[in-house]
Image 1 (cartoon, rainbow, N blue to C red):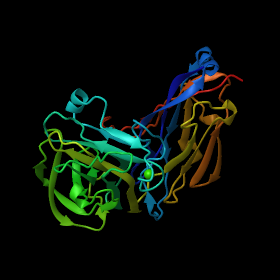
Image 2 (cartoon, rainbow, N blue to C red):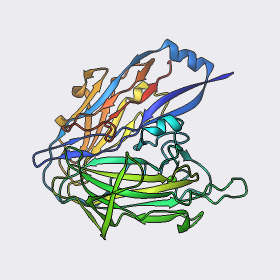
Image 3 (cartoon, helix red, strand yellow):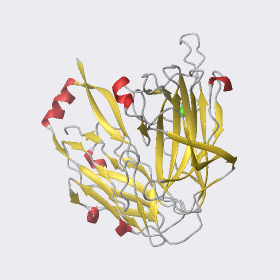
Length: 385
Ligand SMILES: [Ca+2]
């Protein structure tokens, strides 16, 4: 006999806040629900166990000024890190308020439908969010700290499904469209500059992946209604090959957008998103976080992760902190590696516990939670030993 349990895990990627004196790592937080079938005995063990919470705080990273290298900022660009009716690891969903009333199930799937994916085995599938008779825009996005003068290039691959031998067509509605956009925001989350790709529509091609670079420059003083009171876009007034963060920039947001016209159906697939920073200070990257996407975690494996600076900045060991169950255990961290690439290990986890993991990361800015998540809350189960 088998029964079902579930855990929550979260992905890690790494925007940061940069100032001339220092930068502070922050983490976007996208929860993913992963369901696994577990033997009944293991479920019984679950209830015998206790819970602890642990958190990871990466504090101020003192940096030295060096030239940066081009780097892909987006996490989970190919949507391979979790699947099903989930928000992809590293991403955050936005939907207008009526969506919760008219389609509470949500308008998305991380789908495995070979041989459709542009790369890997999965892609993001999105359809209309509301079905309330009005135009509406729902998005999927990631936010990173940025600074004036930083230069980026961005793109995404889009597709609409014409059907095959075993699946019905799901072509995006004739008046619907999808696009990718880059927003530069100041420290108060006000929009400073907007760049968009061309709109992807069914007329662009059926069952064909097409890459859409973000090259249309908008005038943020010229709002354009799309028929959605919760979402405004702006007039395209030029074309660029690179995206330069304007004066006052604190953050850059990559966003996949889907406009549903009235109640039109169909869907758009999205894969291989890219936000490539080609100039300017690059956020420190926190990667290879363990445990992640796991159910049973051998406590002897501990918690470990990597902190690196693609720009080659020095990361002081004293700036890396780990909070376990409300206690700062930074003094117990084993840190190795070079000045700009640190391997961090904590070996103090105890056996025979259920871990409810909370990984908030402190940083200096106060951001709207709905548009800039910055905590992680994986819940991890450890087996009896
Ligand atoms: Ca993929």
